[in-house]
Image (cartoon, rainbow, N blue to C red; front, side, top):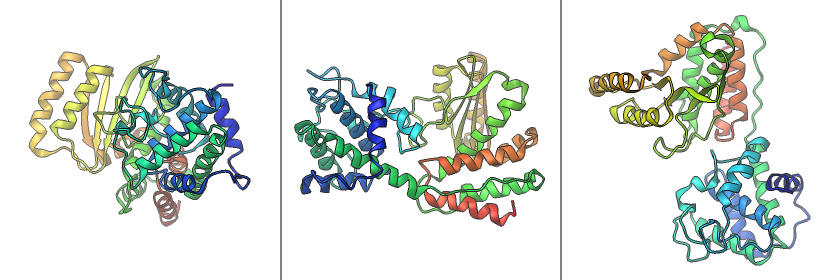
Length: 366
């Protein structure tokens, strides 16, 4: 049995946890601190799942030594990236972009003992995390039940955050001007929580789903799966928010900003990505447009990139780009239903983002 199979086996046992009665009270309080905050500490949640699954498969392994370069250690990050995070995504549960160990505070080169030097954010989270890891290590008999508790919290979070949004049935009701207006309101509403910046990413991802089936330019192209929208540009290992692949190579990239204008620093980061990933085109789209004082410098950089690398760097406003792409798409109904599905199923968005779309659809009579 591999790690994916073990995770799936335990997942099936995690919908009902009423039989669990062997967790000490003090340990339960640490678990509750973690499970009550899994959406804000996805790294901790993912790492704990990975370590527990491995402990269940390899009871003799000291899971505190999570890096292969540690004496007696193993590569937990490899297991996570290969088995755990992809399976969590498959199940529609909270997950990281690639691995829980992309969180810097969790990847420090020290074993997960109580003297661990990494700083883990959240009140009491560091102690809770290390105590739970220690409990896994000391008593493998309770490890599966601890894993079930964590998975149950993820299942409940998914259910709580699920909002059913009915797809539209009549394409004749979809008018470009109304569609742009609706999306702009959805992007820019005051939500009072994080996550809203992913909405335009989902919109353009839905656009490219249609473009790859309708336009000759995108013949034989595939969209790479969407990653997390919480990683910074510099630490992200992807070329951008949206990646279009052609014959296994990066063909086109789209980077989207909702609350930041495109300045020379953003353009330079894109240049670094162009050097590394070598796409034919690299789009940066921002709701706030291009920072006026940096326009000439950005234009110079665009020419430099084209001359040196052959890549066309394109900077533009988000809403103008929406209007342009909608004129290219013949199936606007198909686009909007794709967007609805992406919003409905996204695990990084909050309930408020989903209910807002539902309200807007009703308000626009779609």
